[in-house]
Length: 150
Image 1 (spheres, rainbow, N blue to C red):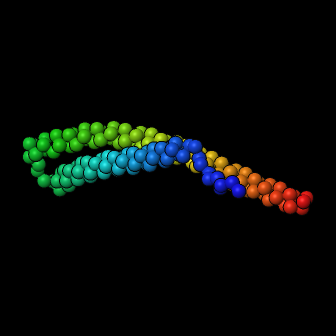
Image 2 (image 1 turned 180 degrees about the horizontal axis):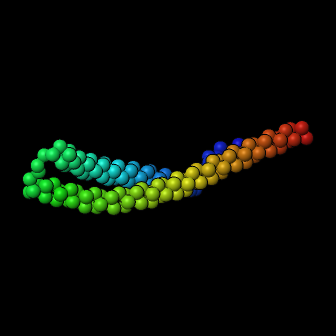
Image 3 (image 1 turned 180 degrees about the vertical axis):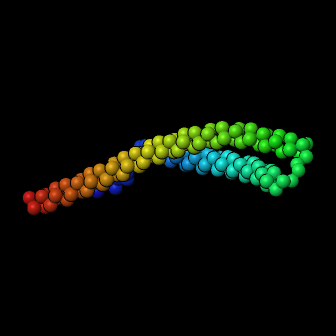
């Protein structure tokens, strides 16, 4: 009786490589998500500080309080600086969104590649099992014929 054959998938190492690439792409996407979140938080923080200073100035003006000229100039310079910083952060935000979109596409491609190899492996294993069962059935039939012919 012949020894039992084992299923071997010749592309197993490629499948493992694609799985590792998929995991690395998932990590890069997670880092891009964190960078985007960080940019969003920075924009929000800057926006809140601008709104807070503007509201304070409005309150003081509406209340009829006299504001020293140097204090007014300082506040305006601060607001101008923060608005410029906000513009810079918004451009970083656009870049972070672009980066996240690229990383998402990369991850989708890696998942698709890995899934295709896994499906092919599954089909090949099913075919192998079918062939093995067919061979075993044929051997059993031949053995039965030999017994009944003699």
